[in-house]
Length: 224
Image (spheres, rainbow, N blue to C red):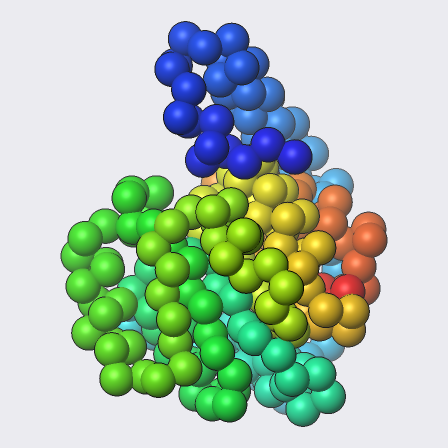
């Protein structure tokens, strides 16, 4: 599987990059045209379904999604303690929340802050919010580069909220899923917005080799 960030090391006129770019664009067009086909069923989260979908400052994860994410992270840590990986940390709100839910586990936030939704301003906010949190480690590098750093680390929970196109979500989901402990969970944000149709398609494909645990609007959790 090709790392979308790694391919950008080549010149824009390199045949490998030209071919990959064409594939990426076509893949997202297919995802948009078949958006409804790639929908996963919504699940019943009980009383959590009644939570108002209020916004949270400095993140696109709403309160309902945060509650569902926290609930399942806590459940995983009770039966399968292990490290937590976040791909795409933005301003560190979900990073800190996961660190609070699992204070005995290390949270590895992987984000290079080189654009694609992560700027120097966002990095400064991430650092200010999490500098005092002992169980957060920031790896300032792309997802693919972080794989080597954490190979062999027992990982029980992964949250992916990075570049929202098909090739990136497919790479992030597929690559990190391989490092996930059996019984662990992987979560994806922004799965129900047609603007990010490629995200939905990539998650739908991964779900065929996993178990759907939860799906509330905008958030999917799968178990390995």
